[in-house]
Length: 253
Image (cartoon, rainbow, N blue to C red; front, side, top):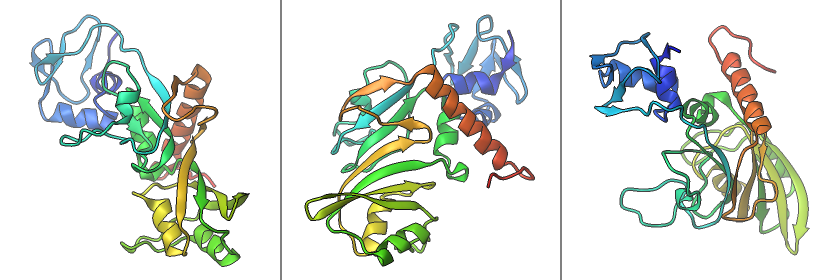
């Protein structure tokens, strides 16, 4: 059955459909030896599709969706000159997997890994504002002024004002206190910098939710594949996000 090339490429790990269109425009894709154009279709089982001269497999690529509890002191992505352990070292599955929801080296919690390039792009793109929920252990109980600042937005060092966040006290741990924060944006080390800006010291940071997927009982270093129900829920959320952000489209309240 013929499908649009960008859909086939996205399914095979070449990023979103928009990224796949760029690859096609650059003349890097051929179908049966002929340079492909935008709008072209192909049958992934019958036609020979190559990217940079390398053929795509003719078997249907199995979609992989993984939830991982990233431990502290593990990298979210591998670096060319960095030999520290990465999340990919913890998930021994073949093929390229995109990382959804990167965490700092010294933070822990839920990360998603998938070869579904289109879904990964939508979940990570800031314009869609998917929720991410965290448990944050701070060295002392925040006062109402500090909580209010975190909820309404904090101006970071680079001048960016953070979006409103849901923040609530959760429980005490000696002199330290756990707070729960839900964000719709994810700038580098954002929660840690927000805390510093209001005079709080973060001792531990654990992400417990991305969209509708929960960390649950996974221990640091453990992973599992998402259920069909979880994948469907993620795709429903992303479809809603896409429609809400289309030019001229209705935005959700």
